[in-house]
Image (tube, rainbow, N blue to C red; front, top):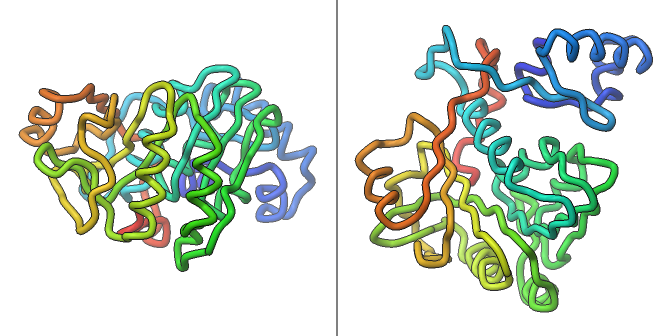
Length: 258
């Protein structure tokens, strides 16, 4: 449970290795925890169950618990058969283990997505392209050419900032270009995932205006005045942080990652 509190989700194989026991033992323990409604199982692993926030000091808790809550809510909008875009945002990547919809296709320009736990009936497609470190983001003409040949039913994109005045912004020009392409190749709803640190903030490169977006998913600690301004233009969904994340370690912080 402590390991899950630190990460939000883990594979059975990783738990077995860290706890120096068999995968069969881990699966049995996870079955018990699921019956106690402390976790939820997915193929090959488990995630913490979202419960009402209580006894959590939000000022000392890691931002990761908010990111996981946003990611989990975002995943609930995915339907069977969807093809979705996910960019290199850490919050957007956190979505993958929470997706319960079947026969979906995830298209992303993030190399890190390869190591994410995902439903056995989902398909992961990488755009290819030049790998931009340290985020392991695939960018450039190759990436754009791939996206230009695909249409997605929904997209879930992170950002470094979002304001009514400037729209959605990022700190990296090459990623802004890819994000913009994803926005334009969607037939359905376009979601922006942004924790409280991104609300009311603007960075160097604009990749979308609010008219390009259908829904913003953020957390309950986002600045209310900024949220109200955004609600005047787009739908805003606010979520509570996942509970049970007390004493998160500093190494889980995502810093300036989207």
